[in-house]
Amino acid sequence: MSEISAPESESIDVAIVGGGLSGLVTAVRASMAGLRAIVFEKGAEERYLCASRLTGGVFHVCMMDIRTDPQKLAAIISEETGGFCSPELADLVACNALRAVTWLTRAGVRFIRGPYPHLSFMLTPPNVVRVGAAWRGRGGDSALCVLEAQLIKCGGQIRRGHRAKGLLSSPLGDCVGLEVESAQGFSQVRSSAVVLADGGFQSSVPALSRYVTPAPEKVFQRNARRSFGDALDMAEVFAPAIAGMDSFYGHVLSRLALHNEKLWPYPWLDDIVAMGIIVDGHGRRFCDEGLGGVAVANRIARLTDPLSATVICDAKMWAANARSLVIPANPYLQLLGGVVHQANDLTSLAQMADLPKDCLVRSVEAYNRSIASGSGLSLSPSRTSVGRTSASPIAHGPFYAIPACAGITYTMGGPVIDSHARMVSRAGHPIGGLYIVGAASGGIEGGPRPGYVGGLVKAAVTGLAAAEHIVATRFSLRTMPQGISSAGQP
Ligand SMILES: Cc1cc2nc3c(=O)[nH]c(=O)nc-3n(C[C@H](O)[C@H](O)[C@H](O)COP(=O)(O)OP(=O)(O)OC[C@H]3O[C@@H](n4cnc5c(N)ncnc54)[C@H](O)[C@@H]3O)c2cc1C
Image (cartoon, rainbow, N blue to C red):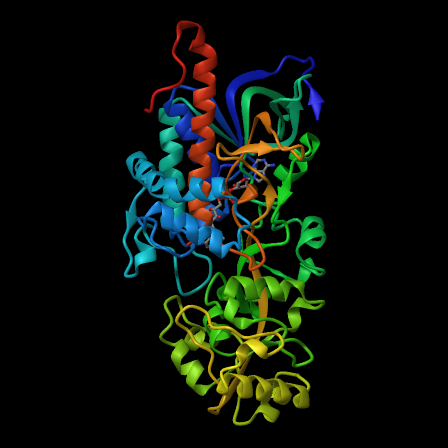
């Protein structure tokens, strides 16, 4: 952290770090209210890659329709996160999800409705494709282009190829600007507010190994590989409260995704895991498969060897998977070059999958016995059911074994924010002038399960909250002597 010093630096209203959805929403909303906002984006390309460009584009809250009664949504957020998300932040998301989507629509972002309630708002054209991470011209890419055009129209800017490296502080301990590195060298930017929107720390090996997994190189990067936790590092000098650091949003993928670009972001194995079991390299179950794909991906990452997990299912489950909602593993995994072992008995299957046969057979038998007798909870680890998918015995040959891995999409944790997206210090008070939005922010997602609330909703809602607080603060400071206390809504 540096205090402001000569040489004289540029001075603006809002400096935003990161040009993903959360950063652009903040910038556009602040610019619409007449503030001078500049986005500093480290990507130098015209269409710099980020999660918001790669995104599947579904605006949901805990996989629920965002038009659901906000009180009910807040209760679901609290339940999904096991109480980890504070009532204040649950209300922020629940009460503003629909408003954020309405605001985006007015700004020119286009949505379509999918065939299920939680797909009531999907960025269009949809971006759930069968082969690899195609994103050009699809929903997220087009949304960012629309928002950038709005920003320019309102007098704001994006500076590509500018990486934020540090924060400036005032003698009072407020954040008053940024240090930025670009091809022209280092510069300082003074601003009334700084908004950190770097997308999380999923691609930082040191941060992943500190918080998420003993073997970061064995967790697959199901993301844009551009978010290295710079916001977390920069915020450290203001002693932030941090939360949810060990949790990430992600999915169970084919292990071959590490070598085959066609095998990510889809198909995922979450639906098969929910029907069958997942075992480690010793052929032993290591988690409750009924917690769902996000939770299972987190448990895989915590294994000593995260590349030792294998999904086991039977013929009935494999056939049922072909009817899954999102691009199913059956048949796409094999069509795209993934590995699916198949055998008529478990002993042969273990041999093919390089698993200890006695242990695998014992694991399946113990699992089958407890499911048949309805005592999944007494299994160790226990086995519950996920949603409408109930656990059933692995009984009908042929049997299948799919080498799996954890695919990390974004980290859920980070510096804790309040309901205006201001960063909260370890002492429990907001830091003046410092905001954290989108996947960089902490306190909304995580908890014991961990609970996934929704990356897009989180980005849009926190972006709006930050901008509106900055606008209100700025206008009240400017105009209070004349008796006007806050900015109007544009
Ligand atoms: C494949 C995939 C599918 C997804 N599907 C869905 C979905 O259907 N629904 C859903 O709710 N969520 C989904 N998500 C998650 C969601 O897209 C993200 O959570 C959201 O877009 C994050 O937005 P953001 O603005 O926080 O971060 P990002 O969009 O990642 O933007 C961060 C930006 O910050 C820049 N940056 C980083 N460090 C610096 C620095 N020091 N200086 C300057 N710039 C910096 C990066 O280059 C990047 O451009 C998906 C994500 C992926 C990858």
